[in-house]
Image (cartoon, rainbow, N blue to C red):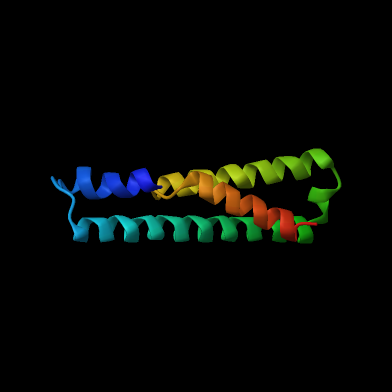
Length: 103
């Protein structure tokens, strides 16, 4: 996440030296990536938990249930990478929400 924030400011925008404004932009970009990655993970985790609670056919088999959890974790990762967020933070948040609400 921090690498993407720094890369965006210095490589993509062509900054040549570090100024106070650039440091502030890096911090804001880091916070933006972190917040939206966690939010995306929470949303996908809630969707998976909702499906596990409401669709009883999915929980009859441990294989189906495990496959669904793995697919939703991977889905959160793919979506995060497509919109240039942190896939790892998204998977972490998704896993925490699924663990909390799918029991």
